[in-house]
Length: 76
Image (tube, rainbow, N blue to C red):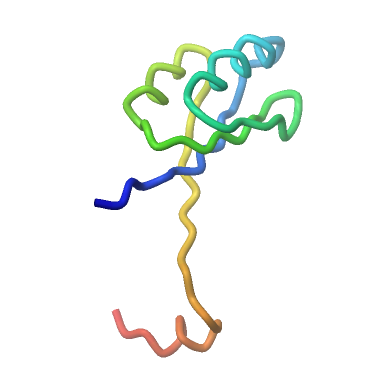
C-alpha cells in the first residue's frame, strides 16, 4: 500500500519559530518560509496535530494533470 505524504503550511506564533522548527523536524522535512511560517512534509497527520499548541496547520493539495485542458474537460 502506498503511504501518503502531506505538505503542511504551519503558521507559527511570533517568537516561536525556533521551537516550532525543532519540534516539526521530528515529523519530517521542514523548511522556514518566513518568521511566522514553516512548510512541513510528513506522512503522520496525527503527530502533526500535536503541534497545534504552537502552530496552526493547513494542508495544501496537489492535483496531478498533464495539461490544464484536462481539468477543464473533467465533468463533476
